Image 1 (spheres, helix red, strand yellow):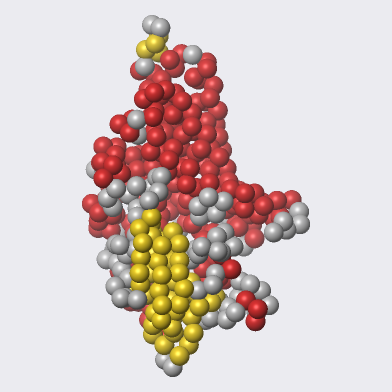
Image 2 (image 1 turned 60 degrees about the vertical axis):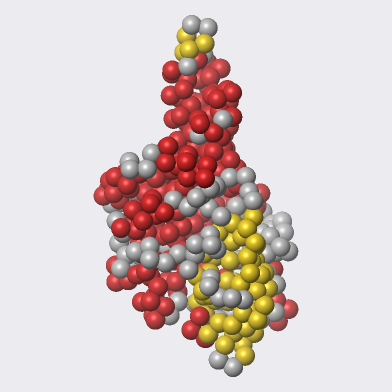
Length: 383
């Protein structure tokens, strides 16, 4: 399959990545700080608007370009820090189905990195059953009034806006549970938003929060996309996210693998490099093969974007393969470094912690496999 992408994207990403080496990311994560300098560099170069149409201030590139760029950022130094690059691009796609006024107002600012927007979807009871959310939005006069809570919301402390998913119609009143859900754009400065910071294992450069809100008022023009149709408006962005996340994962796996291979070449035990032992070689070689396979699957998925059912199936497969490959690569990197792998100064423990989160986020590996079973094998739905 011939993959057509803009090679200048790689050059631009590489130029920025070279300014933020492994020591930068190690210290950012150690201090649990947001990498403002890195974010600002992406913004200045226009890369946060990579997939935003040119008419709205973006670069107008393709999903394949985003995959190539995300892989490059992850493999260089960032690892899962590449999430900032892909999320900065993909959150904009939520607005592709919004009003022309919202597009003109928000997309140029998102492309330039002038604002940050976070998604507030998950809830305590809904979990992976996203359509089971209980947050309600009631139309009262010219406003919507929102009541509810959300879990695991990224960067509420830094975001300018949240996109809150809420039920505008009860699931009992709709033919499908996925109907009756709407999205609302809410400033994080609203005094009715209350947040609680969560402590977590990895992704140290991002803060996560639980939020609660009571009688949160949103003007009519705060509705994003179609009323009652948020799930269908947003699901395309979620599928794009799976492909870009796959690139982030196999890129991070390759970063861990390269670190392990370098150590295996240089570490001398019993008078020879440990990399000369097949007990070291074989697991690393196997990890390399898995990462190359994951990359091929992800590039194929990105090239199929816009071709409907086939793309969704390919996106799930790409994410599943990339997750498995990244888990194996980071595990073997930890083992290859031995005791060194357990310490923060050698970085692979960070790659391992960050990749582990993807076994349950944004979708569990089990749900990925059930989707593949249904779409690829025609097996009956299991949930």
